[in-house]
Length: 177
Image 1 (cartoon, rainbow, N blue to C red):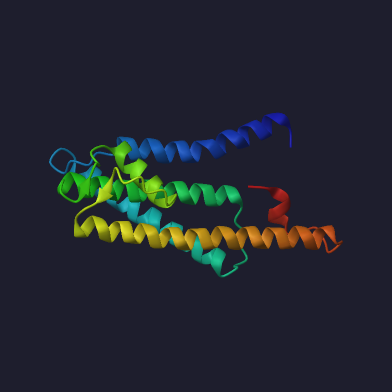
Image 2 (tube, rainbow, N blue to C red):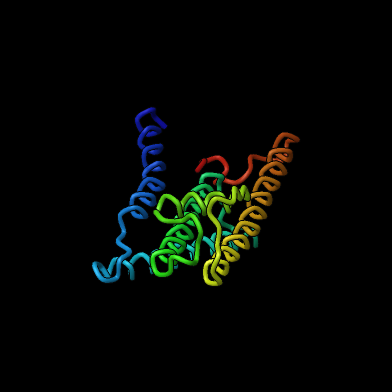
């Protein structure tokens, strides 16, 4: 692969997470002003979370498809944005559901803190609907972490096997992300 092809590939890889973030920040959420935007945001978020669950399930089952670390980073970002969008929608519909959440950036910050299990306490769920979504976010975290650990374990095992003269690994391993 030439340097130009490598540069193009890296730009394409960066375009996906950037596009996801731009979409998150520009989708309208006011049903009075843009009901189609809210519906689109809900459908995109729901579809993204369904895709994330499917990817994680495929990895957990050890399917023929091989995920790279890059795939998991993109999956994590999509999940963060989907949960953030849900949190922001909940807050715009009922401001008593969260304490300290007022903007999209607040929602992204809260989703990231939840995934990272940091929990600073400055933003937290106070209503039942919000707590239900945060609980789903926590369950996702556990499944995602298990998938990452499983992927790391498999890759280490493959490298150890390869280092001991057991072969060249899978074609996906050699191709990269």
